Image (cartoon, rainbow over all chains, first blue to last red; front, side):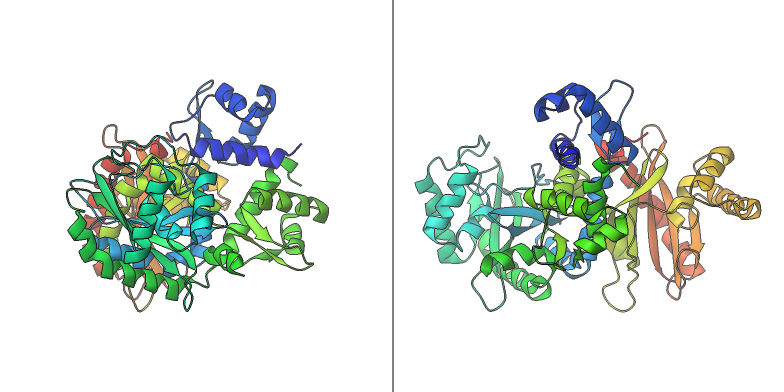
Amino acid sequence: MHSPDRAISIIELLSRNAVGLPLSAIADELSIPRSATHRLLADLREEGYVRQEYEGGTYRLTAKVVALGFTFLGAAGVTAEIQPILDRLAERTGELIVLAVVDGERLLRVAKAQGARRGLLYHQDEGPEVYLAATSNGHAWLSCLGEEEALQLVAKQGYNRPVDGPTASKTLRDILTYVEAARDRGFAKISETYVAGTSAMAAPIFRPGTRRAIGTLSVAGPLLRMTDEHMDSLAPTLFASAVEIAEAGSELPIFEQAREAAR
Amino acid sequence: MMSSRNRAISILELLSQHAWGLSAHDIAARLGIPFAATQRVLAGLIERGYAHGGPEKGDLFRLRVKLPALGLAYLGATGVTDLVQPILDDLAKRTGELVRLAVIEADSLTWVAKSQGARSGLLYNPDTDAEVHLPATANGRAWLSCLGDHQARTLIEKSGLSAAGTIDALLHDVAVARAQGYAVVSESYEAGTSAVAAAIRRSATGSPIGTVSIAGPTIRMTPVRIREFVPWLLASATELGAAASSSPLFKGL
């Protein structure tokens, strides 16, 4: 029996359910007896990670798990070294910037900066893991891998997720076409494959002196502003920021997993 | 001795402050957990993708990016990154100093976001605990100023202050903050730095939900400059109150 793992399972479950869950749903979802779930939640509440609106109400995460992530990013030098690069790119493009990091066989969103202040915002609302089949960050990473490895990763994660983009890729062949195009032009470009009315572009971040991707950097926004031509015109700016991040950050702990994988 | 079910989280908390890693012995010693148990919990964290390290004796254990990614995803789901961060960025750009946001959680104040305005020269970038120290920081005092004296005194005592004279002096400062609508702290939290903070109130109800501060080196954060910042700070606090209303992160009260 692994009590610590259960507490973390509850945090993970609640992080995917921002509006909160009742005790019964948490117990059922994680297959933990209700009495044990009650104890775990009481402990998490005691430690400040979880909050219950009222007796018998739903449980939600507090901001503490977010603060813990920020503490790590601060201690890891990301806040000082990399966030300013993202902020500048957001300012220059006026769109949403996302930095994703290669972590083993997954790509995780680690930091972002929102350049659009008013008007149409591209609101991203999803889990930590990048969906490889239909996102610009996913395609950018896949474009750095061999076809076999890329296909394996896509198949492993799945590629039939219901997404609301009208042009979502339905087959592995479609996805490979996108990835090959990304490899040819050096960055990935998608329009309405993931979210209707939005497009995005992403470039790989290479470990300096290699062609090994340690992360990806994306610009996303409403299709209205992020037209095909506009994305092409932003490419040099995106590349420059990707290089800047590689130079400033490739030795930081967040890229450790990508380094390990390269060995 | 803490209960065993807190250990995984305790280790995550410790490693989040030591991004370059700690040895298993070091972790065990710092947390007062038996070495064998520490190794077991670390193995669990590694298996779940939160940490990596080992297996050689003396090898360092570090966090992977799963924890910040989880936090970012949750923050995204609550709408804070998209709505709140731009407001902080604007204030940071305008003042050229460090702007920080803390949210009220029951009896404590937790840092959740920041934006650094100073691009070069002296940077004030404190490495902080997740929790705001109430008596000594501008953020803490800005929150205390929203409360009655009795409640403020209770929180101050809870934070560890006990000398009656000290508490009375602090309550006096809090009263000043209450009267002027913002709190100023000079050299109190860290030598050479000053900060000014205001409470963020929910637009609809006026109840306090967090605080926002501007902090920097005292040589730049002079009384004159702080007075210049105040209208911007208060305007940002109002805007944050509006933006935050849509976010479950701020439902703490």
